[in-house]
Structures are given as C-alpha cells and as structure tokens.
Image (tube, rainbow, N blue to C red; front, side, top):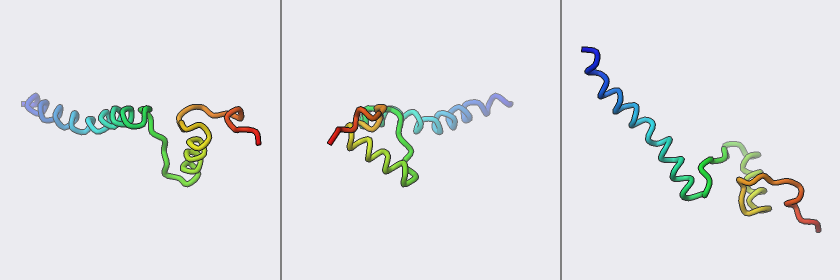
Length: 70
C-alpha cells in the first residue's frame, strides 16, 4: 500500500536535515554565534578579518566609533 513508503521517507528526510541543525549547534558552541559568514569571495574574507582585527568579534555591528583615532 502507499503508506508503506512513509517510514522510509521519514528516515530519509530526518537523515538529510540532521547536518543542517547539527551545524547550527556546532557553530553556536565553537564560534559563539550560530550564523556563519560566507567567506567564498576574497572581499568577504578581507572584511571578516578587518572586523575581527578591529573589535575581536566579527559578528557585532561595527561603525566608525570602533576605529581608533591615531
């Protein structure tokens, strides 16, 4: 019958969704923030490193007040 497909469909759906939720928890544990920046482009990597250098936390909003006067 058609309902015999449901257990295997549920198992496949759960198995495919586990990595997404596992990465959320893992990044929250390791980075302190559950949302990861996309570092595929060179510009994004440079901005990430700049924010990390200026404030030690690249996930906070940074404005001009974060840049020290020299």
